[in-house]
Length: 538
Image (cartoon, rainbow, N blue to C red; front, top):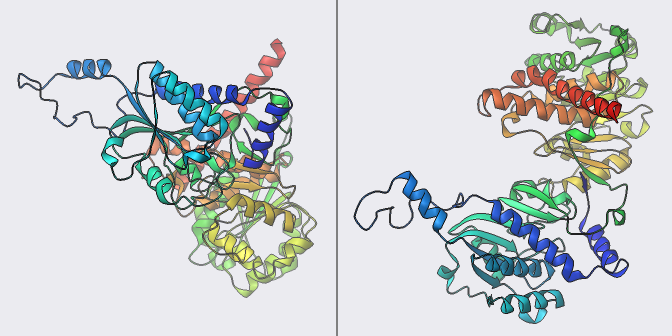
């Protein structure tokens, strides 16, 4: 899915209206209808309304009703919605949705939060149509809050993609009230208070169960806190022609359909599927090296060499599966370099430590290897002291930091408010691929194109998950796959999702995730084969 910034969407809207002659009110009506379709599909009562109700379900004759009687009550009960509207065009979408629901028999309360004199022409037109249908756009009365609850659904149409300042005063209060006494919360385009480009919370923000975003997805719905506040995202077509959208957006959502796993040649041998060199492990940190190597094997690398310090060699030789070649470092750094040069990709860093020998060796490999190098964990910490080595490298470099490691690399403060923009700028500046790990991991290429991952779950937030990602990424890079970093991130998250389905988010481990990598790969292979069969039939 391609994602478009607020500025891009504003320009696309302008062209649709001015160049194609599409009435702005028509676009607004289409947006409102998309909102209403989603609202009507929600099961009532919602998660915020208890079935017991204020009377505890005691009937007039004093008996507790059966489940069938309760179901009949909810079926016959008139559904209700409160629509929170700002004075801009996003508010106009909400007013139009209020009218449509009213015409469908819902009990609707439509509330204006903001200065009535600042209402846009389209918002005023929607207010006129609402009045004709027998409804009213009421002014917000913060002193009488009980009138705004309870309702089955709250529609948040306070602010759209153009919001660039913190919510304050009545707007902040209204945003916080969307969940009070309400079942479902549905946001129009972007949850109010979420920056459409960065996902940052501007002071306070609505936390939606569903966000109906118009025309195309926005980056802020999938990154940062925006990914948490948006709930389930529905992209709704409102009638803007496809040709008005740029062909090459700078940001996309990485989904299964955009990934392509190549077929393995039937006459291939182990040398055809990549030779991976892993420099990892140290006293007390052997697990990181073992997980990395095991993930590489599961990722399909033809030959995997795990180079480790001699004092932990016996431990890792016992830990690793038989498919991994565990190799103790010799004293001669040139011998290590020659071993690495015989490989098609290298992973440097998991559990490596930050000693003088490790630092010297990492810098030597970075300067002299021409193959793709994935830097993770201590590899990142070591080069943070020598950041210029990134700019001097000839081969491809992929960095896989979490936010803390990235802050050391970029000398920036935490928290990172604009993870997407910051990752893009770093990748461009240092001519590398940056994989900024976290909820909705971002893969930023030095071309400026960024992908936001769509897979993964909280059960992956354990020590060792990142080591597995580095190993999987190394395996794909060693096999010279296109977009190895992006594919590895998606597969890693998908394997984590499969592990969570099997073991649950609390009990799953990085080892469980690694065991699911083959099944995630198989899903991509099955997708490829299905597409091939369809093309053959056509």
